[in-house]
Every structure is written in C-alpha cells, then in structure tokens.
Length: 159
Image 1 (cartoon, rainbow, N blue to C red):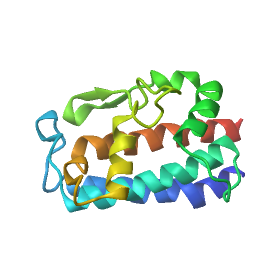
Image 2 (cartoon, one colour):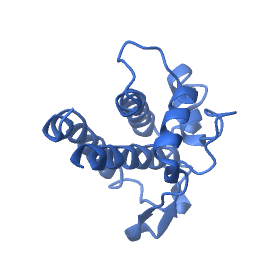
Image 3 (spheres, rainbow, N blue to C red):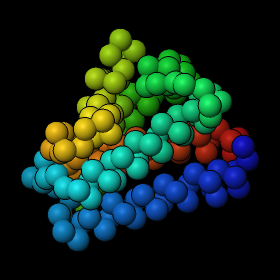
C-alpha cells in the first residue's frame, strides 16, 4: 500500500472516528473523573474502533484480509516489529491525561492484558450485559491505540 492509499482508506476513517469521539465531549468532558461514564454512543464507537483495529492489525501485520487472526497473532508481529509500542505515551494536554494504550500487553494473555480490547470484545459479544465497558476510558484508549498503530505504519510506508 502506498501513502495515498493509506490516507484515503485508513487515515480518513480514523479521522472520522476521532471526530465522533470529539463530539461526545460536548456532553461528557474528557476527564479522569468521567472515565467510567458509559453510554450507547461509547458502545457504538468502541465497536467501530475495535473493528477498525482488527482490520488494521491485519494490514499492519501483512495478514490476508480473509485470514482468521486474533489479538494473540497480532501481538507476536506488532511487538517484534514495533517493541516500543508497549511504552508509547499519549498525552492529551487539554484534559491533563497521559497514558500508554499498549502498556502491559503480553502474548500469554493478549486479550486480557489490554483492558480496552477486552471491553471491545465484551461489548461485541454482549452489549447489554457489559454496558459499563462502553465507557469513556475504554473508548479513548482504543482510539489512541489505533492512532499509534497507524502513525507507525505511515512512518514505515513513507520511508
């Protein structure tokens, strides 16, 4: 994939997801105080972001679109290619937040070691039972994880 294809097919979609997240801030301020606030909007966003991450992991890892892969398969490739992802920080100055979306990710419990991925999976399989997983914190971490992965991919194809 070249840079133009990436920008058209993946980055434009990321920007749309980010815009949808930013719209939620009209109702719930981005704050540690609100990280457990859950809603249908966060559920929808978390599902969209998680699905996009699942698709983009395949692109990043160079797996075929029809190959059945999971977060454990992605872990092996991503952490070998991009080991610093585990310590990459996201800083949102306006909310005084700093965090590492992939901190603690491990190959033994790849899904469980990323609380936001587990939340996405919980929402995907039982949205009503797991509605509290559709919260601001899980959504912003998932969106930030997608951002980091796409930025790394862009740097690889631009080189």
